[in-house]
Length: 406
Ligand SMILES: *Cc1c(COP(=O)(O)O)cnc(C)c1O
Image 1 (spheres, protein in one colour):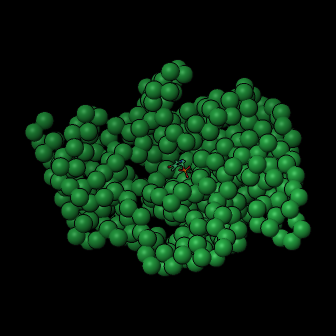
Image 2 (image 1 turned 30 degrees about the horizontal axis):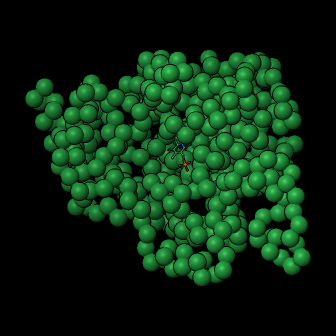
Image 3 (image 1 turned 90 degrees about the horizontal axis):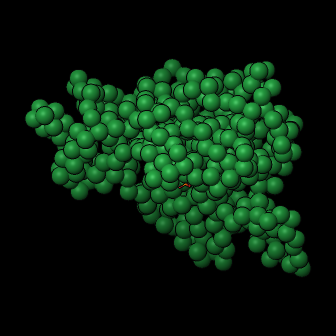
């Protein structure tokens, strides 16, 4: 069976993890702080906080910004549930919007229609690693009529004076827009290092700060660092220094810090990310594209344009003019040929919890259509040429078996 996205753990990672295990310091410490600095250098943003997940990062930012009951957060219907769940955790209301037909990303035109006096945050997602139209979105929240609608309630909301753009870049570390890295493209960006993501630490995430003046990003970093560890004004490592045992709790904070064991994996992964990992992933994408573009039924995903370059996270092949039932049958046939595939994503409003809140997937027709016709293909570091060919043949044969017999 060809797996969908197994991790790539080699001797270099094992050695780095063992080094941490033997060092006498396994939780947040020097390696986490080095990983943060390396991420900041990689993205060229102002400061980066490493955490135990992207989900925690998104929620911490919403709480830091004072998002609460009565507030609305705009996000795509076409995303993983984490993006919406964190809004629910804060007691606020997720406002889902539809997608673009071509690139799966959130429609900026639909965002504009959804903005009202309750909107506090817009949370776009760079689907599959392909950046959204950041220039357009950054401009939108600065329009005078939209700024006038903004009704600040917290200190940070007052300080920003407009809707916050918080990018869920769980897929898009290393992607580029107008030559700039994700992490520098809006106010705050959150990355995921979950096991199936491009760069993994098993579980993990990071917040990349890029707030405009008058915010001091270093100061916001320190504030969030404390918020991510029980509101404790000294971390565990600082407390071990001689006579430095006394600490204070300055807020009822959360528990979301990254450990040095996990950061060791990230340090190795980041070092070879551009020069090795992304190159491999692009090669796989290009091979799939070359094979499928010969077929009328194949809708090839967009992953490179003049202004945008993907991080090649998910290869989302759509089959033209098929029903959801046909797509499901094709997926079954592909699995029968010993190839694992997936669907990114089932719409968040289609899940029981969100349906029970009154959301209806039919309100997002483009996202729904994408979701019903898409198949995500295996992309991982050790995928061999032979395996790629097996995947390609399994997809072609499965589509033909279903489209010709039905
Ligand atoms: C994976 C993912 C997340 C959650 O990341 P974690 O690190 O697992 O919390 C959030 N949003 C999207 C779009 C994702 O794919």
